Image (cartoon, rainbow, N blue to C red; front, top):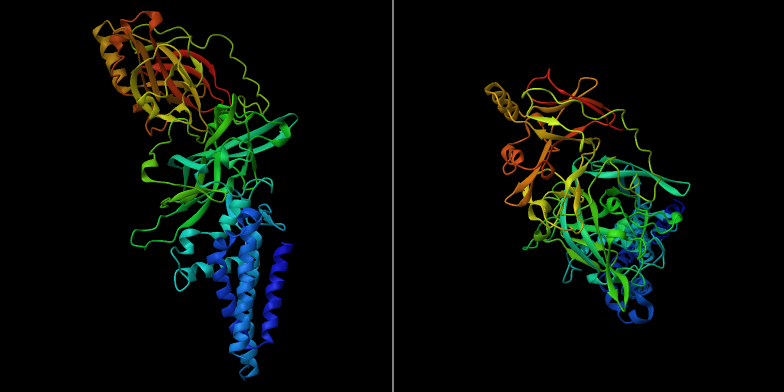
Length: 615
């Protein structure tokens, strides 16, 4: 705030000076300063090439920019003084008022250009205490200096670059938001980190739309990091998230080993220019979230765990990230070099909050690294291993994260979880003890390279799906082992055995129950939860076949299950008991107690359960 006040005073002082110089002198000075500003913006990168090897871009670019501006301003002012040696006589109030108005814009131009030059320096994200971007309630807000002199200069230059001062490319196309780009380049955790990285240092492997992200609150407690997560939508309800899977080459990291960065150093730009030169001007949006690769500097180089990496989390613009050989975990792509295993690249997902109708053009990292977002990279669903919002389920910061203290397990209920099976054939299935309980584990590990599996993976977990496949024999690399559970829910699995109806009445009831799909569990308070998934496995033709349905997002749970395609009742009935599996999947609220299992259309008949669902 103090520096912003100093900037405002400088503009006021320049305005006051030109009040007494008069309208003509101030008008000529404004033209000179505007022309000098455009010359600086248009040619500073070319001038920098004369001393780029000696000074480097961090110092060489701002020096070239300011030298061009000051020298051009001096030459033009001397030229105007020679061209117009005398003033003109005007009424005093016209002369002073006109001089003040022109002087105000002179002040904006000179002070704004100087501020742009300062922001090109490798001085960190803040400019003498002024931070360009802040976070308020999950929303990233943009701050400006009083009178906004640097915004005026960048906007004025963009406007003129499309007209008389235009070159091969307008400033709007080359640098859609100059100030955001400068902030993004220098927003390093440490000033000595790289601001400029090679153009090929970033690749985008895929991108997709999302509607949710996790908010996190965290604090250091003893030798651990206590973290609480909650799922939220965009800060602006009419927006969406665009999530990009980025791959940063080790050349983006200092010494090809340690990558230190902040989230706003990623920015997405769009829409792309139209072929005929029309269309809306591109805009820049800074990243607001990413795969949870956060490690706290005071807790040592804790390795990022896979379930932590699978969570998409919103972080503030000043949060520092550090990925290195010892802690990058699944975000690191290691390779051998000279007999050693080193990190060759870093891969994770980055989220941007953008308008709902936004069309992306490219993603940029720091200064110089850019990757175009072509239509071929877009995915309708998050790809395999993508980071997604996970709500309050166990993940980073909870029981599976080394950075946090483990939570105590809930006490097991007394007695068996499943009571005696019902007599007769009013049920299509009986619950069994083994395999029943609160769990999101899949009954069999699945190969993520299988096409039917890869299409329904979300954050490394099985999401909404219906398919069958032959289970592979032998070890699976990086298997899918869990269901994706919606935020605020717990998964209960009821392992079951199919029942055969022998009498005509029993067959009719069995058929009715299958058609109606009245598979449900009842709580102690009388609430019903209907099955939203069913799985079955049995050998067919000597191969173990697994079939599953899972509908976590259905609007009508009691009607979501469909008839099996491959692993039917007859297949299950003919399989040996140790070579078959069958069960139902329920999504229930935390903290409930399940007391009945119903697998028929009659509400008065049920099998006792004893399952306490933890909070």
